[in-house]
Image 1 (cartoon, rainbow, N blue to C red):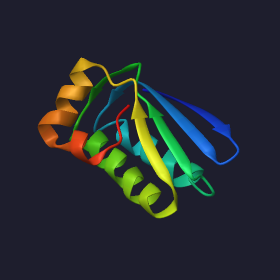
Image 2 (cartoon, rainbow, N blue to C red):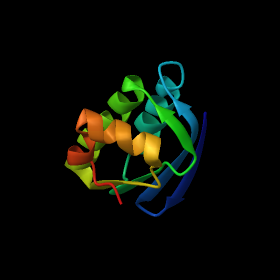
Image 3 (tube, one colour):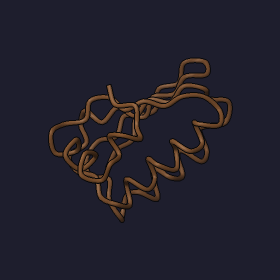
Image 4 (cartoon, rainbow, N blue to C red):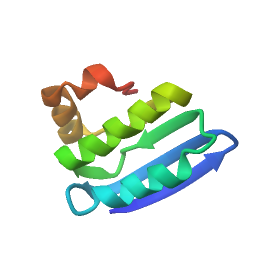
Length: 98
């Protein structure tokens, strides 16, 4: 998995590539923990994400909870496979997916 960060003032975009699963989710969790200070607008760009497991969903949900308190969060570029996982798990009702 690769995580590309783009910060513009108080806006942060995390472009996640590859597979977000049990072995890679802790890496994203660390990035979120270290990078969200002062961020009021978080975007997850999932254009190049191939797969997300329950561990990845947990990290996304954790980020959503943090951003609910300090700003907003959106998810962009989710492919058909990732969207199906979001739909089946009910995450499509929780997340702002554009």
